[in-house]
Image (cartoon, rainbow, N blue to C red):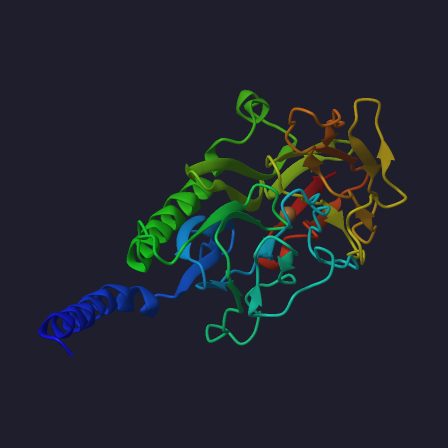
Length: 348
Ligand SMILES: [Cu+2]
């Protein structure tokens, strides 16, 4: 070995050392962390959001998704060009999938869809309940959108870049970003309680109840997030015999119901004793607190997009006339586990 080649080999060795010092911290961070949703302690305010919803990772890295809320979510990577499956609300008898489910630890490279089932924080035992997790590995470079199949405006993007490229951010940045977004989205949701409807604000005494309220926001270039208040605004309302109460959904993309009596196995369709009105609402008459009446899903149609067929307006209103006195309790069949319940007191 000549002096020259020895020098060259030692230079290569030193180079490798320097290179590994540069690469090793990135290898340590090969598993990234994302929270799927956040909620207030009383569960009423929900951040329907991936926190964060935009990440840059290296090919070969994985992301661990944690589901810490009592609201249901999925983490889903559809194939590019794949039509989004219908929103499932919760799973009420409807299989969730893209189609089918893929196991924890699946890989996604854009060639086949990957999805969790519906995941949420178990009810018991609290507060020690462990949030479910799901990990996805990204073997190949690409820009991949991810969505929640249940919440239309809950989306994000992962940018998978070659291992030789420098990543713009590390996990501590994403943790701070997620924390900041969580605080703002939950504050947005609770602040929306003051908005209600202009009609509500106009009338001194009103028979109107808002069925949830929400807003869609965008805080990164990666997708949309929704802040939703899962509450009836005017959750106890006092009316006179013969009055009609009108419920209006004020959430831009979340399905709710107004359900009296027995909770149906599938709350999406209206019950047989609910009629359609000429102005596109639904109506019913409830004579006894033991009557079972379900509004069916109250939700606006999805947002319009160019090159898609015009959708119908959706059903956002439900009217009930109360011909007898009594106390009539009701729930949102989709969100009663979040405390979304109400009461109509009918005075003689
Ligand atoms: Cu609801």
